[in-house]
Structure formats: structure tokens, C-alpha cells
View 1 (cartoon, rainbow, N blue to C red):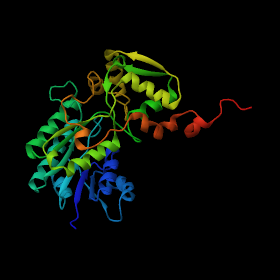
View 2 (view 1 turned 180 degrees about the vertical axis):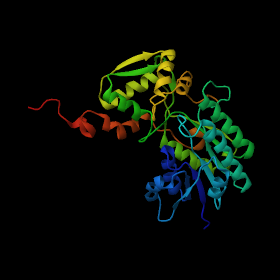
View 3 (view 1 turned 180 degrees about the horizontal axis):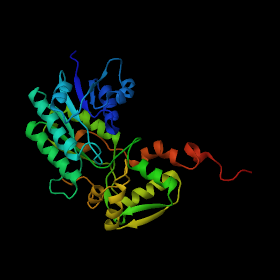
View 4 (view 1 turned 30 degrees about the vertical axis):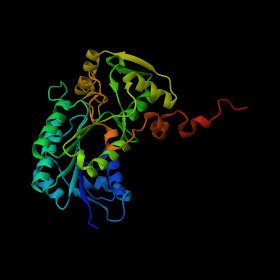
Length: 318
């Protein structure tokens, strides 16, 4: 039986670790390409002995990308930035994505899954959204058969949304509702996105297509904050924060090493982040989306005042 080898760029990240697990289970031999391979060694137990290997690769360096793809019949490009630090949105979302697709095309690799985002638009105000759209164009120009996945807000045990606001609620009496909390999201479970990657690689009819990935329910930003507070058993003030004031605060907050909010994110929050009515979705990949309510208890318990077994603690001891 021929060994299926795949190169996963950005395999050590939040989505990457789940994608590697799913690909290993599907029988792929995986080469994890990332800038710091020593930080990805925790992935080894996700596969059998020798199934998961590592290679140092900066996707902004074409020669390193070429080397990382050697011997593979497929590739997955996952790197993305929430905010620029060391590298810019252009470096990762545009140059890096183009390098991967162009190198794949030169090596005759036709199976490429590229991770973008709902809201990718070259005319958007947000530089994040602009560069995601520019990256898609570079990928399809080099490899028309490439499959693009555009997830909404991705949630899961290591996410940077629910964990961030649950952590903030632990120390702050107030949670901000940016723009009044009206922006709508369609959160998608990280395991479902990983499953979508595997499914897309195995479906010939998926080549060249773009899929928008969202969960089964649409929530406003306010509803998501209420969901977090309900799950961690805390009462906090939900204070509307107009976009103008949020932008002013973000101007200073974005200077932090791991900022709570940036100006570019405020621009993103001015627009809903939901699956378009006419888009191909998880259902077209044969996947039934997981609900937020089914997964949050599994990892937000640590933000409860009494921990994992808070529900078992009696209200009053006799």
C-alpha cells in the first residue's frame, strides 16, 4: 500500500494540532512544517511511531517551502495571524500562502487545502480581511485546484476567544460589548474544521472550490458573552462599548505583547461573521456541525470559582 505523505504548514498551532490528529487517524504520514519544530514535538503521540515528522520552515522563504514539500502528495496551509508581531499580515497571509501554492504547483502537487476566513475581502477596511482575500487570489493563481476553507470564529480547548473572555471575567467586573454587542458570529468547532480538511482532501469534486464553515447556530457578540458567563457561573456587567471608543482603547491595547483588542479587530467587528446563504458548507463535505453548548463545558470549567466539580458542591453544608 502506497504511503500517503502530506505536509502541514503551521501544524503546531491551535487548528494545526487538531488537523494533525485527524490526518494521522485517516492514515496520512505527516510532515509538520513550522518555524520552531522543537515546539511541535508534543504532536508525536497523536500518531503511530514515525508517522509524524518535523521540518523547520518559514513560509516566507521559498527555498524552505520547497524543501518542506519534498516527497509529499498533498499539503495543508494553516498559518495565520490575529495581529502582527514580528511578521506582518502580508508576510503570512499573502507571501506565505503564495509560496506554498507556487511550490506545490512546481512539484506537481494538486491536493492543497488553504485556510482563509469568512469575511475575506480585498475591499474590506480590515487589513486582516484584505490580506486573507489577497492570499486566496495568490493560491488560486498558482494552483486553480486548491481548496479554500473559510471558517467563522473557531472554538475549542485552546481557542483565543472563549478562553480569553472567560479569563477576563475571572478578574474584571465588566465585559465590553464592542459596538453594542450586535455583531453576529457562527462559531465552528475546531474538530469540525479538522474533519473538513480531511474530507476535502479525499473528495475530487472539492478541488478548486471554496467552503464557508460555520456551526449550527448564529449568535450575537452579546449572546456569546452571556454564554461564557453562564458556563463559568459568574455574574458580570455587560457594558456596551461604541466602536469609536473601542478604537480609541484598541490604539493603546494593541501595544501589548498579546493584546486584548487591536484597531484592525475593531474594524472586523463592524461586520457579521456568518456563512453566506449561497456558500458551500460543512454539509457539502459530509460533516454535521457541533454545537457550542456541547463543547464549552469541557474546557471552560477551569474558570469557574469552584472548578470542574462546581455543580457537585452543595450550596449549604448542614
